[in-house]
Length: 246
Image (cartoon, rainbow, N blue to C red; front, side):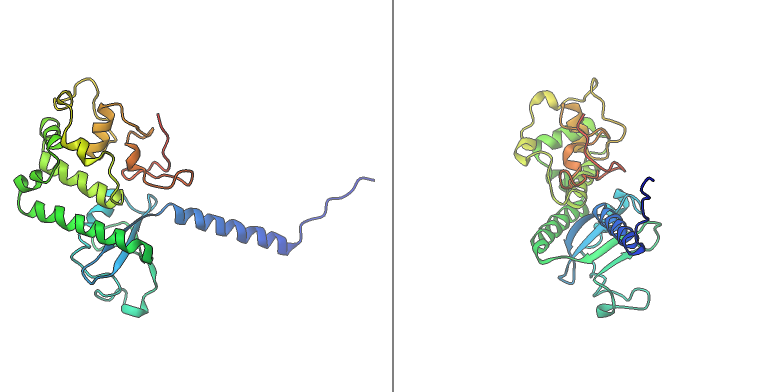
């Protein structure tokens, strides 16, 4: 007679199920893109967004207001709780939006980056308050000329670019400032043969597309996929979950 395969014991099935649940939870956590920011109360807070519950531009605009605001643990009460009553990690829905954002107390090794990003953010927002001329004066000379030649609103384009790099890319720059200061003359005229991809959401993406840079299949520059290599590199601007070079 043939041998009969026994069913797995129930406790082993439970173990497999629990393991699967833990892996799914880790996968969900890995999809959250975190940006540390030092807030008005002095705390460094990690703000995060996931393509499943938010869009990058809403996240960018929300974080732009955080430098002048206290953190959730030192701000007005949330859902009837405040201060030490709140958990160290939460999901919140900003007032007037339909998105869900993640927030947690940043680990000590992220405090330096959080302070640096907050300083850069405060600087560019202060320049924007002084007007378009002051905002454009802050841009590298070569890139400023490129923006004037290739965008309808160069001051706003520079502001959007900086906010993307500071908030969505955690301060990473696609191109060194030295290169942006001295762009070759042939790159300063409007591009007609290499149009910007429809999905591009920042000026580095369109600049990279026009000059044969490293692009993902989604049309965005490699620097807009700031995740860890081999662990998923989600795009800062769209729903693309991993960098695929084309």
